[in-house]
Amino acid sequence: MIDSVNDFGWRTAHYAARGGNMKVLQLLIDKGASLGVTTGSNETLLHIACLYGRYEICQYLLSVYPDNLQDVDERGWNATHFAAKGGDVRILQILADNTLSLREKTHEGCAILHISCSNAKYDMCKHILQVLPEILHDVNEQEWNAAQFVADEGNTQILNLLFERGLKI
Image (cartoon, rainbow, N blue to C red; front, side, top):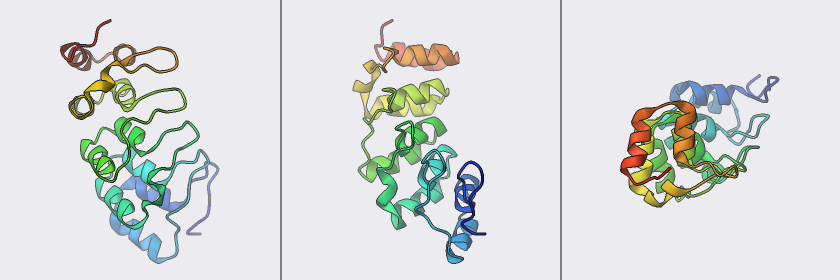
């Protein structure tokens, strides 16, 4: 049952990555669980660990299975997009340290700043703007900029940050 699949294409290793317990993931690996599996929507273990802020799991996966660093899900999201949504700045940094570009966009043209803004991740937004200030003026396919993603979410703290950095409406 180690690699059995549920209706969403999730296996036990996906749940272990989401839960963040390294001992559980290691036990599954010792029992034969595969690290290269994806969900029904093509999410990898790394994607899931990034989304749920599982720093230790991310470090481990990057060290033993770096092949899925470039993988994208069905929406065109790579690990940086999931990290931006999850909000753990340390995870975004280790992805960048492992040469994953912070400039990739999703199929809908969303940058990591758009994703962190739409999920009210202030510290992540602040970090992205520090390491990649030119991303401030990116727009998606609908011509939405970061402020419009924030307005949709309603976080005035992030909106003020964007204005302080020079974003104009």
